[in-house]
Amino acid sequence: MSKPLIREPLYQQLQEALRELLLSGDFAQGDRFLTERQISERFGVSRPTANKVVAGLVSEGVLEFRKGIGTFVRGTLLDYDMRSLVSFTRKAKQAGKRPTTSILAFRKVLAANLPPETLAALQLGENDEVFYMERLRLADGSPVIHERRWVPAALCPDLARRDLLGSIYTFWTEHCGLTIVGADQFIRAINIRSPDSALLGVRSGSAGFLLIATGCLADGRPLWVERTTYRGDMYEFHHQRPAAGRLMGMAPHR
Image (cartoon, rainbow, N blue to C red):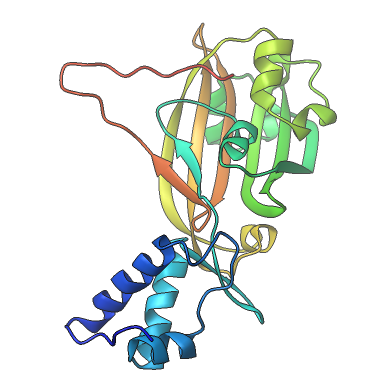
């Protein structure tokens, strides 16, 4: 039996003890973790305290709660590198996960029917045609991203539904010969509500991220506008600041 915790604050002590336990190698990715009762008995704390600490580790993405089953050790979080544009497919594979895509919508619409801010961002006339696509991206079968994009049809007229099953960036760069130089991105923390919460398999009000971005070509033309919702328990956003006096560029997609 582990030595009971005696120092204050008890919540912080228990949190550190459980983190050490997770790093000890006793629990592998996907293993069922200790129950509240087991934590209470092992560390000599109340069950409400055990519940509070476990809930905190779940919200951080360290543990995963499965309704009616228990709490399990989470796998590697997916990383969104804000310095460069890398496809979801590539990032998921780098994290050791199997990426899949569910196409929710794909159609051609008139620019006149777009939201005013989207029309302005794409710099189109009202009679121009736009591809609208809506995709649910999954990692190892779990939905992690709900993505909506608007793309000028003239820039990729051959785009077909089948091209959305993998990396759209690969299609743009290799099939269309487009040179993507970066994106203007805005990211904010949100509470995921319906219908996104149902699509992503989380409770309404769960933590998430909303990414609003406009992708740009080398000649300055906008290639896409997107509004993408990320599950907060599955993603982390990463940005490395350059040293003083150095510039950090935006790498192209591959």
